[in-house]
Length: 281
Image 1 (tube, rainbow, N blue to C red):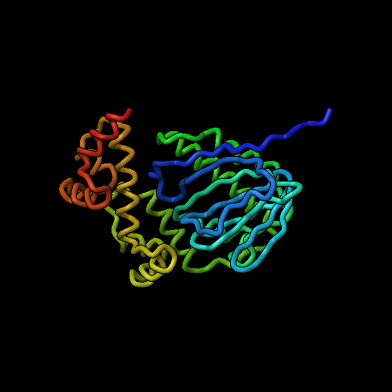
Image 2 (tube, one colour):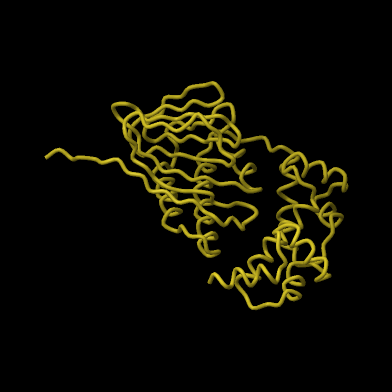
């Protein structure tokens, strides 16, 4: 008896993106109808599709690619893209959209490039499919789900790194920023300064500033503040700590300065944020 395959689409869009380094924006899997098309359009985040079965076409940066089961393609933020299923053998794929400070650093170590955003016959393809489906299974807007989705995403991206055929030459700016980010993640709860970060990386403050501006379009101080605010959001929403205790826990020596910085970033006071989030639980 001939098997009848129906088209389907299962997708999830995250509304809370509290994680700084890497956050899942959307995830899903789809069996497309013949000639099903998305675009032309752009995304404001990275978007990986891994093809499970069938065929289709991608158009990106004025280039066309015919793709099939086992291939992967990456849409870069701000890049006009069209992709469409084949008319006779429409593709089935799993996808994940994401962004964050780690995203560009990790993707540079894969075989994806803006000039050629496809990987033909992706190594570890079955494992990648499995991890993308695991991300979907972990979907949810609570902090626990966000952490699990991001953990699964790191695992999926690690498979692309593991399968990379080229050994990328690390851009010094990205290397410096990555090292600074690691230091901040380990020491943000202490009253560290930009000079402390620069000393750890082995740069002058001006060189560190330039590295951050090139890679993240942020200053080191802005990144440090954003990182602390994100951590504060978790403590305010998930614990019974007072605003002063939260401020101390994320490296602000003054609760007044913390409140001003928090309100500037989130549009409300830490107290109001805490009441709003804990009221939703």
